[in-house]
Image (cartoon, rainbow, N blue to C red; front, side, top):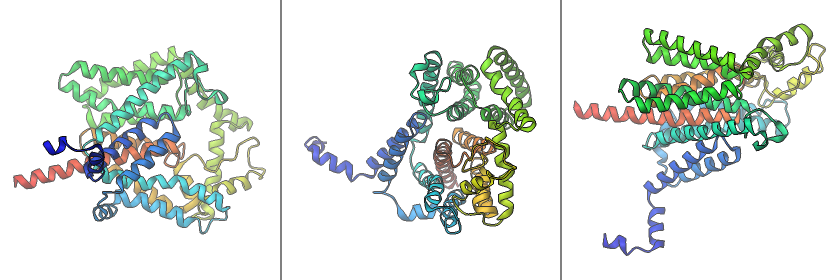
Length: 427
């Protein structure tokens, strides 16, 4: 004790610098900052994530880390990156386009690092709390922007209730938080901790109210019932499912009657399809259908290994000159579907690896507990939203997947190892 009291500031800093515990705390801190900044800033997310990776290096157990990479949950994401890297060799796109298309897969390399770290850290739950608090603050800001539009930081791309980024990213965040809160709320109700359960239920409801009366994406409208269905099948009895279904239907009916914004968003499903199919007018839905139609043809041309990394942009540009292309439809480098985006560039090989990622991660989260629930929800959300977007490769949704699966997966593995040790000691 006396020696510590006489320690100089320089000596204390040097001791902390050489301490694996101090580095581990720093890694946790930057992981928290990364996830807290994700709803607000792309730049801050990249900076904090890079610092997280730097801090994990000095006391990394290389042997244990390399051994962890052999697990399917780590090997599959790495395999997709390596396929994208090798795929640059047979692409006919410019090298700038190839490297640009490679960059979204780089984030998959962070997933094994997160799994490794949070398998050893006890602060995984802090990451999810930080994300929830950050999204709750963004929800408040969304209401303020809806009332005072001049507060937005995107005046050149004004969207109702959007302070930063866009309504698709915001809806993804709010949907994940709202549905994720269902599990702890149900647990608290079983434990008769009604006040805390009511607080979490109110927070979840606030996200849904924001999406109903401010702004919501069509992808969220489709995926919310699916995510709630997963929760009901896994954690509720049939009687509870029936009661909650009635309550949800009633709530949806009230929101439908009271929110012109919600009705307008839902109506676009039909109106945009009719404009595209009957009058050849380019719409958001029409563009997707056009991308999908041509993407299937691209896949048929090179079914095994695809056209190579970064080839999508050139393929769509060439077909846009064809008379079959609807005039006015924009040319995008991806077909707004994760499977088709992978299929165009890397064929059946890429599809097999993509589905290996999703399946291996789904199998990881088969147990009970909050970490299993959040991890499962992140994978389910990504799988179903990737029917309408290339969300695994998008910056925001891709990082939601990498961080969510990485942290929750590490927590699950840590709990499994603790259980195995207790079982071994008991025997």
